[in-house]
Amino acid sequence: MGRINIIVMTPSTTTVVSREARNSELERRSRRHLWARAVFGPLLVLAAALGLVYVSYRSVDTVRRGSGTAWRLLIIVSWWPYATLVDVILSYVTLSLPLAPVAVRNALVVVYTAGLLFLFMPASAAVFFYGHAPAIVALGFSLAAALAGLVAFWIWLDRTYRTVDYLPR
Image (cartoon, rainbow, N blue to C red; front, side):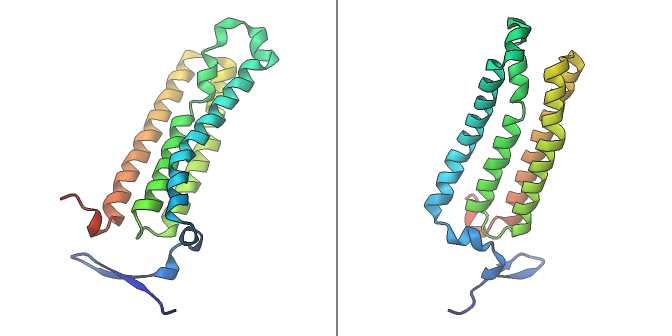
């Protein structure tokens, strides 16, 4: 089969994107599979977060501390909105932005992993075990800043890689 090129014309440049440049793994998946992942991905993240809360609540250390520490269970899942938003953005890029390069998806996964492992998980653990009010406020503000940054990145992605067919009328 011949090589298929997609021509993208903007007022300033003309770019030819080969079909081979797209991620071959995404091309092998059906649209139904991608939509199912877009719908059930955030639900699986929620299930993992709630499972973590349940295990933490049933642990011996939490029960021994008394009933006054139930608020700490919410701190454990403070990373959930961040993880869900990244999953939604990845699904949107996969389904609605066919001209977005694979490097965008890979960079988003790297940013997600770094933010989750090096920012929210350690901060959540520190707040969970020590419970100081300034640490809780700092965690909340860092989560809000990360979510705002992700939404701004999502808007930039949409404006940069959206094809003419997706423009509102």
